[in-house]
Image (cartoon, rainbow, N blue to C red; front, side, top):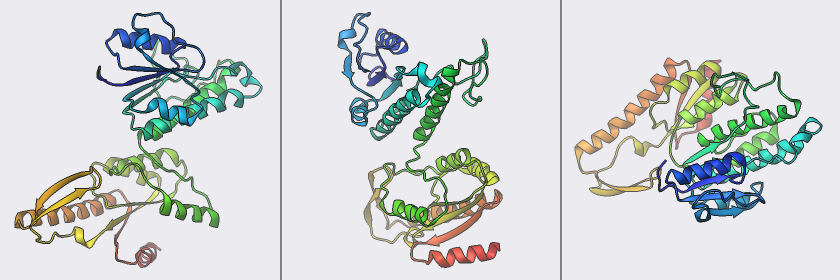
Length: 329
């Protein structure tokens, strides 16, 4: 974290938030923004008046979008505690507003491309380890806990999981279901969904399905597979699920035509680059990369017991799938 970073502290009038705000300012982080619901900031340090202070409700997605704009780092300390004591009789009174607030801020922060998001959890989520540190993969606290805080612990753990989802940039997840309406929904999403992220990271969806799908499932992974370092997550996913990789490619990717100097646009990075296509060495390297990636895809999936389908964009995917299933029958 750099001193020039724009830093947002939510819940800055609370116990943790106010002390964190003061500490950051004293450490030289002066580009600070703070939020509170109704109370003002605690004016207990020199420079407090220089902090940008915004009052509002984080359950409001519009306010979350406003406070997270142009921000580099977020310390999310805010929590709705107004109905905490009533959770023994009605857990949703406390849990629902907090989940709504956390989801709104995470989603808007992700849309605004916030670089780092620190979520302040709760000791009600983790078992009492005494002086030993807790790990995030530990089971949720269920023993020797005041009943009213059980719902809080589960709520915080759920929000921790949401942090993982957003940090891994999973833009859309449709839980598996049966029925015609579910198939139509998948088709609609495939046609209408507009992804925000244009880069390729095959490890992310592989890791995601390994963690979210507990039962064995039939999984199809569609990609051009022009990516590296996904074998480890592929191995884990293929051990748990019946995995098939469908490699989609265009014939124009196999070789490059001699057209002299040509400007190419990289859709993933957004950069333009001039390539000398008249160079035999360049054309050879282009083709070599294509076939290396094709071979790498086939070998990695085969070694990990997963199926493969190569499908060109001008080929019938129906025939490809029928032939694949017939061979497996």
